[in-house]
Length: 271
Image 1 (cartoon, one colour):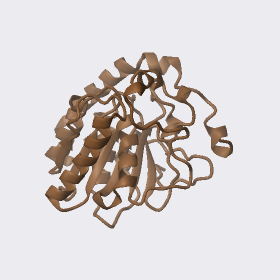
Image 2 (image 1 turned 90 degrees about the vertical axis):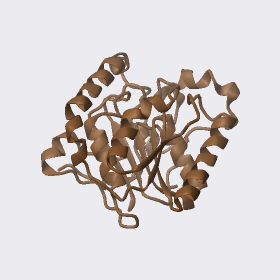
Image 3 (image 1 turned 30 degrees about the vertical axis):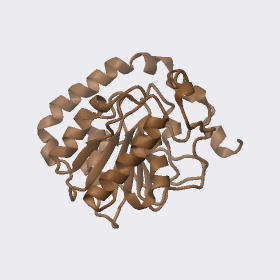
Image 4 (image 1 turned 135 degrees about the horizontal axis):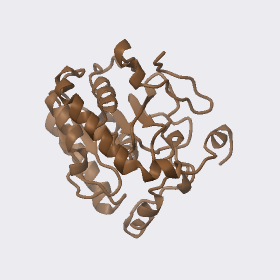
């Protein structure tokens, strides 16, 4: 592949300093969540529609417990993926996620929102393309769906260890430009991400597509207060009346101006 986007994605993975400090920064982000926890009831509320949350690489539903508990307190019908540890697109994973979406959409009789963290977000976007009638919107957290080279993710080696179990082997780039999802999509990312290059998380902004920047670690995106606020705000959008994210004036310092991939223009702004 060649073109403007390659120039924007010349770098490899995140700096070693960010990678080595991920655990400590993730713990600090959790501390911020604990401090802000009393404010959870004040987060934006929606219509309580069903939400399916997909974990990242080598993680399971335990990793998304805080995120799901917050959404549950806001009135959503929240579900984990119930497929154990995420080791990539195995037969059980691919078939299980599709069955999970079919089951939930049939149970509630309405489209569901997909929330995916890291690899879970890549899965969420793929599922949305395959089952558009069952998906209301997609929100990803630190998901490198614009990956061009494996070296742009410090999790690539861990992913490769399980490649012999995978039934789907996707080539890079993961998603070509110019192929937006048919439903509202939001990518929440951080320039402080120590696992994946933040530029690989940028979508091409459009009428129903946006990027939201926060100041969090990769491991903290599932519980960082700013990420949770953005997620709650996005899920609260009325169906069929989606609008770009605009944080309240008092919260704007927590949301840096979002970056734009080559050829795009910003949809959201903290200015």
